[in-house]
Length: 330
Ligand code: 13P
Ligand code: SF4
Image (cartoon, rainbow, N blue to C red; front, side, top):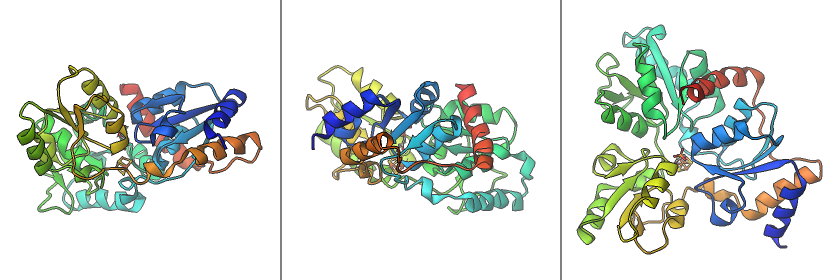
């Protein structure tokens, strides 16, 4: 079957928008009407008029569209779960709040911020406590806003993102379960989650490229380890990394520390490298195939939609608060 032709036919016929994150396989990514980093995808989906969304990405992304635009029918060709988002659920969130309360911080003095890579139930807990969502492209702004409340920040689930932004803002951070984490001594208290893909980039990789090409630049995603971020020349979200690399002169070499599919799609003149000796693909992002995309669109045409995202009303209500607070700040 010619999937590309069939997908184009279905997109022309149906009131549907196909959304694709940068980490999708090339053949899937090329079919998307909307692309971007997590923040851009949330914003663009909210502004889009089609009643149907087919989201090629990971579960929390499709869920976020359902939360900010509950009237839309959201389908995912694969409901693949981001490994980091899986590291925390609402009971681990409650445990983290209790950890701080037991160490002398009253609950009303805690402001939770969740990275968008989390389940809607965690976002709902955060929203209920007056907290916000952030993404890799707006974390600085959101944390800055959070600090204005005078409360202690509980940052979930990515310890690296929490630590990296604390470092860039000159704040003290600690990680629950890692050494002595005294919430009274820190400004940002991080949950101990991480991205297994971005943990693959190491100081040895940076050393390797700097020794081989002394003028090379190193650009990484803020989900990388704080030591790696500190040794790099640029840190940014997926969109910010693309903009940075596109702005370099063609002969400037750069090694990029983020997911393979995206880096492989960057400048094709031999001067862009993946900052790793391995092939750092996100396994769950890679689950979606062009056939899955076709079958999902076809299910709309056949009036029997598959893999629809549902979020219960109460979760939508509070998760929406946390997401809208973020969108307002932007
Ligand atoms: P971005 O928001 O930068 O696209 O990141 C999403 C993600 O999951 C990175 O691993
Ligand atoms: Fe999740 Fe990491 Fe994959 Fe991003 S790269 S979707 S954080 S597992």
